[in-house]
Length: 246
Image 1 (tube, rainbow, N blue to C red):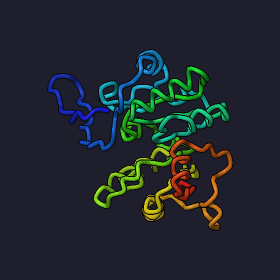
Image 2: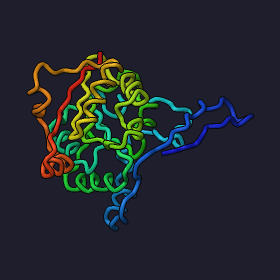
Image 3: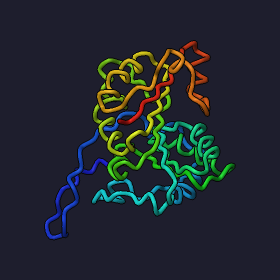
């Protein structure tokens, strides 16, 4: 992820748009990567890129040509895919759909790449960075579904503004999603649910719940993740929220 301020360079042709200063909170790297994982990142990640996303690769913030990569397939996005178990299972189950997985934590990216070595998929691409940079270059109305599964809860009140379910993220998500597209959110944090139910509808999404069963039970095709299994072992209840982009 770049933190370049995008200053102008006189005499170098049209200037790129000034880059918004973005703090990034959270880990980009954990314990040392194994040699095999480093090889995955070096050898496999470049060919799985959705296109030029970062400000170094794409300083003019030109939009990605989704059709050139995926044809007419609908595009689904997973924000923060963790170790990639849900993303791989979903992409394998839906070869008619194109996927972009976004995850800034390199250890998680390496875990996903290891899964793809064992189970190659041609309908899946990866952006290993801040999803806000990806939002910059996704065409308006290009995403047919978005998954946000067990996002970082940022439990301290002073850190709630870092959560994904805040106006800065949701405004851009609304822009890149098709009218009628779904946002699917799973979390074990009750206060995250509270904030989501306040902020997501304000951003132009309708909550698709007719009864308590609709948020207590996972949607059809749900693939449990290691984060969910940990939450259930520790006695926390999972919540499954579906929203429709209006």
